[in-house]
Image (cartoon, rainbow, N blue to C red; front, top):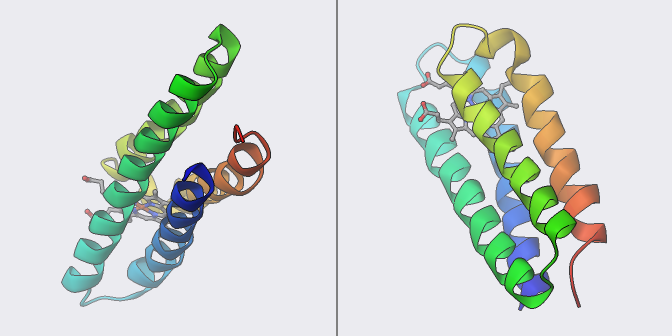
Amino acid sequence: MIALLASIGFMFAVVTFLAGFRMVRRADHQAEVLMHRVNGYCTITLYLVLASVSVAKNFGALYLAAWIIGFILHMMKVALARTKYVMRYGSYMGAALLITWLIVIFTHLPS
Ligand code: HEM
């Protein structure tokens, strides 16, 4: 169950990341902006579901703190997306999220 949620979440993170790059390169991109938003919010929702299931299963102060830090990272990307700096730094923040999903989340899932 947890591995399935994490895999779907990671898939969404990858798709959002790639769509983010496609989107910033195109001039007529309303549909791509919408897709990126939908994908992005799906990624964040899956992250929250995964965090709740994992924390319920394996409660600990440090463990909870780590999930909260990951959530703050996601929120920082959304906050950044709403500023004019997103074109310059969006890719770094997106890459940070992807690495979070790939390394931090995958190697610390409760079994
Ligand atoms: C896993 C990686 C990513 C996630 C989860 C993500 C998530 C999001 C979300 C949720 C929004 C909508 C924010 C709002 O409601 O205003 C957004 C907007 C945006 N993102 Fe991303 N993003 C990711 C990667 C990227 C990358 C790699 C780029 C660019 C290189 C990028 C560029 C943008 C831009 C330019 C917007 C603003 C779109 C607009 O309203 O015109 N994102 N992102």
